[in-house]
Amino acid sequence: MRQRLIAGNWKMNKTPTEAERFIRAFLAADRGADGVETVLLPPFIGLELAGRLLRKTGVALGGQDLHFEEKGAFTGEISAEMLIACGCRYVLVGHSERRTLFHEDDGLLNRKLNAALATGLSPILCVGETLAEHREGQVREKVTAQLCADLDGIEPAQIASVVIAYEPIWAIGTGETASPEEAEGAIRMIRGWFSRAYDEEIAKNLRILYGGSVNPENAAAIVAQPDIDGALVGGASLSPETFARIVVQAG
Ligand code: PGA
Image (cartoon, rainbow, N blue to C red; front, side, top):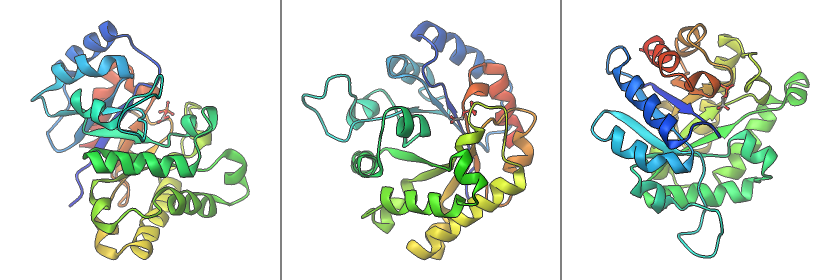
């Protein structure tokens, strides 16, 4: 049985003071039953404080990115070990904003995945197609190419710690979501890819999230789909009350 997961990606929002205010309000809010795993992904400078506030609360912490090397002369970068030292269990890899705005290619993302897995972090690998690819019916082609390249050489035993987030780029921050059926179709296709590239059991146990304009109004219908195990939430994760309502909807 796959545990549902709702992750809040704050992107470049919230100072440590604002992060603390959010976390206190979020922990006090009604988040429904305990069945849904919840992860907050603050900017790097909020991680240490967030890690302290979230300890023993059942709410997990993750980074939005990492560098693939363990340490050294990589100005501005953060290692997997540093994320773990702040209390992170998860890290986003390959968010479309990193792929597009920061030119991160599949080879780089493969190294980041390896670094995360080698250190014991669970990577949340983001994949998804552009609007043009969507219109041209190239969802399968695009997403499977990303999976093949990003997961190249990743062993079957390592997949147990991986989470996939299917995020159609045209739905991110646009207010336009894929319909639950459309999201389910893409996510079922991804699960099918894992059963062929790895095996049936691995595919059955893999958690696959949907991301792209998820909010308290559409979350329940999305996570009710049989292959969708939760959501990666951007804009709607910035308010503690709104994000808590999404967690409740996923329960
Ligand atoms: P959004 O972002 O919920 O604001 O569309 C999702 C994401 O980028 O992960």
